[in-house]
Image (cartoon, rainbow, N blue to C red; front, side, top):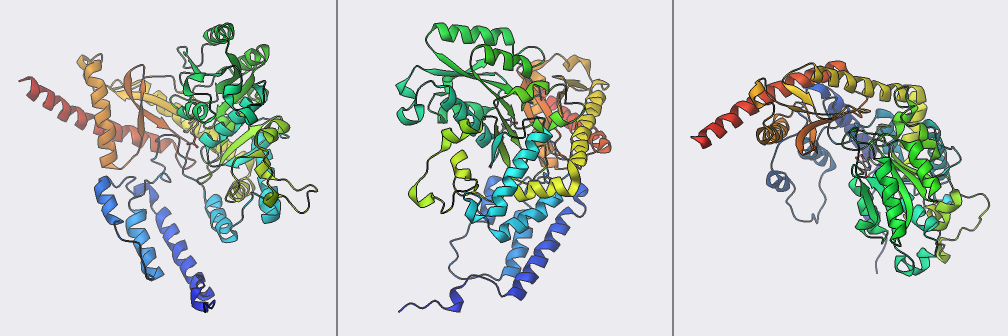
Length: 498
Ligand SMILES: Cc1ncc(COP(=O)(O)O)c(C=O)c1O
């Protein structure tokens, strides 16, 4: 006969729990201590990192103290330090300490805001931070919203609402095949998750029309309207225009108010992918650029990007609450609440049922720092990158490849020797090599992209720890690594030519 023995309980005795939490706290403080001097990337090969964890499923217990040491040695050491002020890659922020503390507490409480009676405070805090985020970026505070894993999920959630609201037939019941083919529109600079969304919504990747951009990387409005008219004439039903609220490549912000006007004229939904740039709408530098944001039917933004929240926290905002509800509502008997009065049911507004308690870290950060301080940090990031772009422009061995917009600069190293400055066949491989060498070097971390066919180095700053002095240091490292990469690449090319 099986008995529920004390030994089967997985908890630590409380004194041990306290001790291990303190050990973990020491590890956290150690991680941040001297962060500026730490290598950002360990540069080991996939085989080396795989080998560290290549062990069978453990059948017997390990001592938790030595396990923590193991985490420090193997996990910390092989983690990319996006918490460092020298981190500039992709659109990755370094989190914040209020959020870090909140994550521990949220995990201890283990709330699931999927149902109100599973976490009343978690649900109400989520509704509150959704409202605060909408207010912070200048959107309708009454908009419906949900915290999801990130910008990709937030875009998918909003586009699902757009599809269902504008399809003109009951697409939820009958599927996309039951009506005329639907189309959506974004610029060629739109994030890849939008194409994935079109695919996942059953419309097909090609249903997302990619409209060319102008010199400043914003969508060409004339070409957009032409494409809509041509599609209509060919029997398609254009349902949604997606504006970029800060493209991932260059930070370009489409002319949102004009896009809203086109959407209105053609009875289309207007969505803005502001996963990266949204929070900049609150700053003096971004306010005007984002003036049309409030006209959007829906917005995807991320708290884990430019609101500095630790992963994960994406935000889907939809102005018409009923449009969001009717897109996701699916009540099952086992989910019905015993008391419906005033209890918000987030599963009715979202695909996911079980979720973690994301709202606590966002709420604690807003409370701990206040909106003004967060806004100042975002504005600071913009100013620091503008300063960096001016340094690049003033330096002959580098050149900008796109206008610096929001907190992104795309540029390349072109050597100090003018004979290479137009040598496209040399400069792209050189800059690719620089990116690889920078990873191995580990003092700074950035990523690249391709601008007009040219390999670019790209800095994106969504880190409140980075100051002017850090980007001046960055430029020195880039020049040093640029020069050594040039010396070795040029030597190899000469040897090959001989
Ligand atoms: C403009 C834009 N949209 C969407 C995404 C996807 O967001 P996430 O990585 O949070 O899924 C990103 C990510 O960088 C982005 O920059």
